[in-house]
Length: 274
Image (tube, rainbow, N blue to C red; front, side):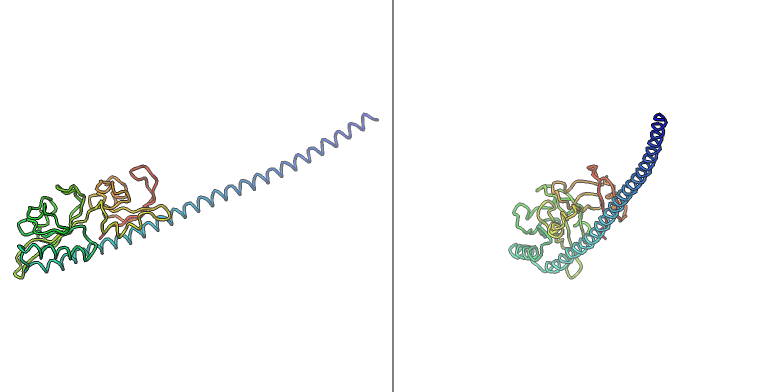
């Protein structure tokens, strides 16, 4: 009788354990399901937010590139217009009057922040005056290929970035021809932008070197040579192997995620200066 009672109690305990185990199992499955759902939602939300952030940054960088392009285009037009206006003063001027030439060039250079130096060159390629004045340059024939090309073209001219033979500065040379009332070519007036020194580009874009989201800007010429960069030591470097720069050189514009030449993941917006 006692043995039977013990057996019955044992069986009831086993049944209860089975019931508890099943309940715990179902509860565990529900908990795991909830946790997995939450995990998937968190991952999905993170991925979505990350992609949204990437898209927003790309759009902002592209908009900035478009704005900078338009500003730079207007800037060079203004440079050329200032030189065209100045060129009207020289046809009737006596090139032997060095004091008048010097004061006129000083006025032209100081009336705007466009150029680091301004030079007057006659039709034979001789420097008649330069501002700031440099005795070593006045009376000498121009030595740079850019200045020679400008004189030969007898037209509006904007050079590629190059290093000057004498001073070893990296510059861009902008010039306008001078003609007298009869249409005879008399020379050229040119302005130099010293790329690795304080200049109109750093004045215009320097405040945008670093933005709050870590973006920075750089400008290249049609050969992929850096004209403007936060690191002035890199100005003059050819970066045409950069994926984005390659597309710019093919007249493409856009925005994309890519690795730069240093292997850093980057979000770039790019646009060509008209």
